[in-house]
Image (cartoon, each protein chain N blue to C red):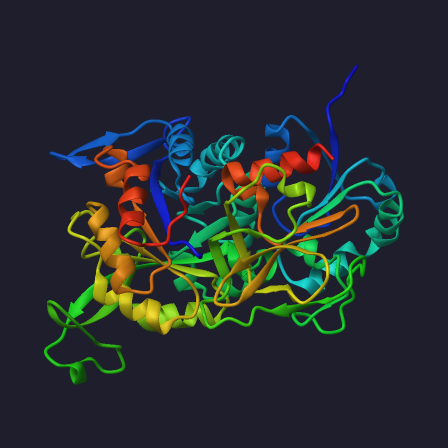
Length: 200
Length: 275
């Protein structure tokens, strides 16, 4: 019997999907790229993505009803970087653009005096130890590349990092997981986080 | 704590089927360090924070080889990969992104067509667009004698810096410091700043140039050119606002391992990623 874990990766035309697929494959899973909303049938979904919030939500638009349907089944979904930001309601980056609103809150510019974009490796401070993504992850550094983030006042913040101010690194609500950092580019720590997602 | 990045750079000769890393030149003989993907994997395992591949052959026929190199590398290297050399269009960039690259570094094409910076930023995001600048110092007798050029004080006297293109073979008259500012304004996510005076010397980074550019810009600056030992990295992180230090020969010749360099920096209280 084929017991390979299949993960559906939504291809909505925003950025590099190869890295996330390589990481999933490396961990023994089978990534399935889907660019047609009607084919969105899966046990696990990853929404990757880099770029601007407005372009992202625009492109993701046709998938939104299916994603919402998926979320109501309690199966796990993970948003990465822009893919995580779009789980929220709106963003300062693209006024008027509407996110999935699967989580409450909005995306704001990082209020730091340090250089932006926040590009590079930063220390992960895990706030919710019970979050299954961080099983076996004690300390660790992960790779970020962004200028906007989820306001850390929001509920559901599972991990933060310090970049001259508190920056949201990860969110979690029920079956919805999000990382602002790129686990597929964060060495062994990132792979462990992805593996935890696969084992959900 | 936010970390300074240590970035090994692979100068790739893609005229052979799998490509090969050019290690350096000794007694006029070019020395090679093996297949790029193999070296990249080793550096990843040793703790490299990012890996840069520069196509030093940079001709159209060899673009396919770079694609293969990146495809193969990205299968088991999970840190950001940057590709530079000969990327002229959005289409060129898309090919390397599709192969698994995370960023492209553009130099000649950006100077010739600055719109390419904003286009790359628009299509792939600023974080994917690195503008590489090869800067050569030009001495002047006084800061007032260089027209509109930005003149800085260096240990060698007053200088402005000129951008060079085509891998250092052609000079443009463009002020490198002003160009860095323009690249930022146009949407570059990072600047890879190479000192042509220091490149290949192993005497250390150009501190005056790196300090000036990293202080004037709000985007990250990658210091490049001249690294001969871990002390040079310490110096560039202590005396400038550089976010990352790039080096080639010290790693290829195995003079220093990446791990060793990182331990050296950590002991001297530079924030780096352990592992």
